[in-house]
Image (cartoon, rainbow, N blue to C red):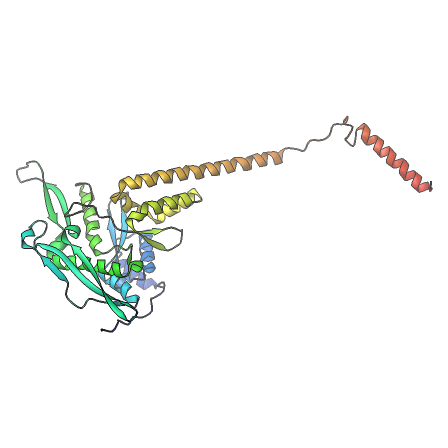
Length: 360
């Protein structure tokens, strides 16, 4: 039985010097604006990964389109390994990845090597026993292919061409193995890794951005089966609070609850600003569900605005009453001090006082 990997205690929120911040700016984050840079560092600190070691890297989507521009922090395979190793119960795989190949499935456009699947096993300790945790990635599910329309040299009508992502064409075995290892790590340490963008999703996001920029297709990268693969998301549920990992299937309900629990329109605006990247990705992969959530948001905004208007009207009414002069009693009113009854009472009081003074 192999010994576990000894790791230091997990680092706390990083305190960076101006020189370190400038170095991150010049290297991995040179394409980010100041607000985007702040959000990226917040995400990196929340998962305790180091951008300078390329454990976490920002990806800018649609950099030239102000409406669609967003930043996706994604975790490299090294970053996933670091998070798992930090738990103290992780041991890396000891053998090379298992690769299944079927020459009959080779296709020059979508699968040059005829790869079928990759399997990677990592080890997790439970008590004193080490258990293998397997991750299995199938080529048809993860290989990113892109469909575009091109014309021939004679200017004929455009035709559809399916092509594999260049990185996957060059390093097909490595890329599929990384996906399998990421799945194994997620399975073994779900509480630490769920919701983090990984390398297998990076290529899909890059192709999405390029497709949308060129205006080709629907702007989404498909896998070989033609599916749009939505990732998990990072969501801030409190202003100034930490980011939480939310599975894609749970995001509509979480967003709905977020809007319904909001106490003011300003709070909704702030939460939408913090979660801008997540909301944009959600709209891209699940537009029908995003529309339903948007209706909830609009309804809540209208209700909160109505509450503010009612409160303002009530304050104005109270102020108007307070500004009205108090009414004075009429001189002929018997109960008023100046009325007949008031005069008789004063006279009776005066006679009683004279009798007491004279000793009667």
